[in-house]
Image (cartoon, rainbow, N blue to C red; front, side, top):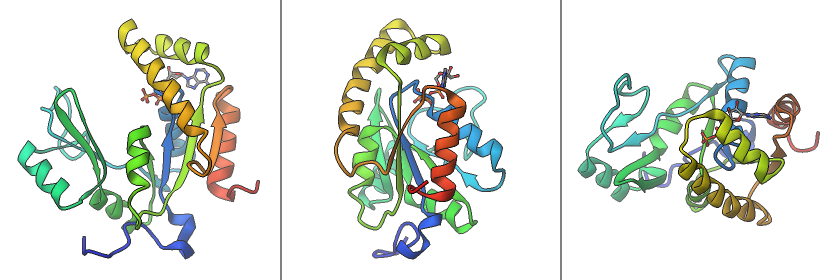
Length: 204
Ligand SMILES: Nc1ncnc2c1ncn2[C@@H]1O[C@H](COP(=O)(O)OP(=O)(O)OP(=O)(O)O)[C@@H](O)[C@H]1O
């Protein structure tokens, strides 16, 4: 992308700005995003991340991830090509500006599911216009129950996620960080709130 180009649509095109959905692991971000995709086919798009980890069986280049080398990833970092990136278990993961711009160019509204550190990084890109949605659990007990109920994590991983969740909930209290905070108690009610916010804005 040319230097100085806005990464996302300008202020007057606010209804085309990406949504950044964040919240603790297990709170229901993926479930809510899937409901949005299902309710409004052809409206939203997610983006494909770049990673330096090896593909797992069944993963498809360009659909699951863009699989690139460490040297390629570091070159992209030096070119400021990512709105956010992280290193986890020795592998890089990042969301490129290009993949976002590509979806916007198709007329789609981009939904980004991003964790707290990513949100902090995105907010440091002056040309990145977005709407920030935080999904909050009704309680830490319920969050733990959802993580256990999902059955995808070990107990050790669940404990780590719950500790991280404390910091995420604390950060969510920072004034001005999120445009809307939705408690995901009942999934249908949370979805209605998210849907209304997305289509009618914060006043409804
Ligand atoms: N309102 C709800 N009530 C009860 N269970 C829910 C609710 N919302 C989501 N769940 C369940 O909680 C579990 C976690 O949801 P989900 O995977 O969508 O979370 P997530 O925030 O996307 O997590 P991660 O960040 O780890 O991907 C799933 O099993 C999901 O079915």
